[in-house]
Image (cartoon, rainbow, N blue to C red; front, side, top):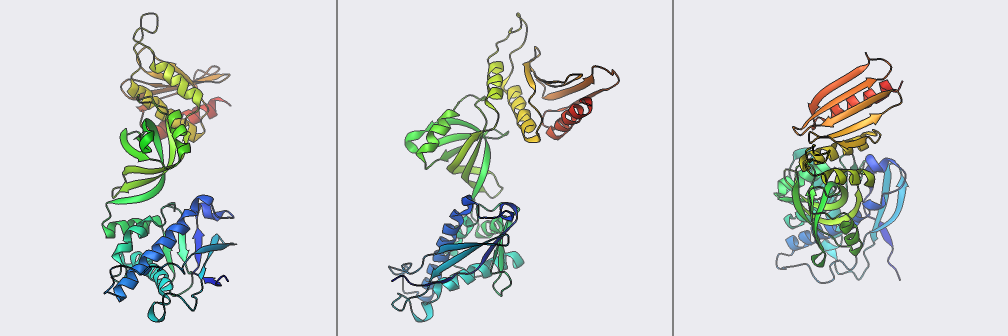
Length: 376
């Protein structure tokens, strides 16, 4: 006969993804991490009370299993339940409610961190590592509330999670994040790969647990500096200063630029010196990376695809041709970008700007404003 279950606290998830109806599937692993945290804290409490024991007794968790039994409206309110303690349970007396005590201690600890910036001495230090893992899928605009409106209410955010890391002096912090970069090598026999991250070009090692990911990684593999830029959804280790140290697992991968854009950049990369009837400098990989970076910004900003041309001077030109106007952006070998826009009907309607390729906001604003105004 199955033991009856009882509520195990009350959660409310607010902000970000949780303002929509339903629970995002990607958040489900948080419940397993929470269960492991409760168990670790309960074991710490048990060993503190029974100092003669080196470890918790066999069967410690036999009568403890969290189940998600409902999701109620009101932001997102998941309902967790645990089995009621049976008469023949391993624990009795002072230890009979040890998992409930662990739950309350977790919330009291969160409140202490939030209000005083410190972890109370009653919290088992051996559970700190699991504590830092819990909540890793929370985004910066999301909050987890425990038992709202009660004496043991507490909130959990990424900011509080980072405080736990700092207090516990954990030099590495597990996060779920999205990284933009290039796959530069794969060691399939070790379920490992190397990934060059973002504009800084730092290469980090990574691992993957799914065989399906291997094919996807290989599809984007290129050891050159012009490997296609991809977006990787992953579990990563982050240092105290928020630098990615290692990719622990890959959850998904997809291209960032459309394939035709990548193909065009590869064509330009292959041009030798003298490509223009004996003239024309080859285009450096640095300029091509700058061009790719700007194309990524155009994509994010909703700017329509430009025509892409090599320049004899070793630069790359983007061009937008309207019926009665033209807009162009030239990335020069110096790293400067020369922007120009003009009307074919009114010679007084022309705009120009010189700026660095890294001033993406200025570049995007100029192009968007020029396209809008000259299209009228």
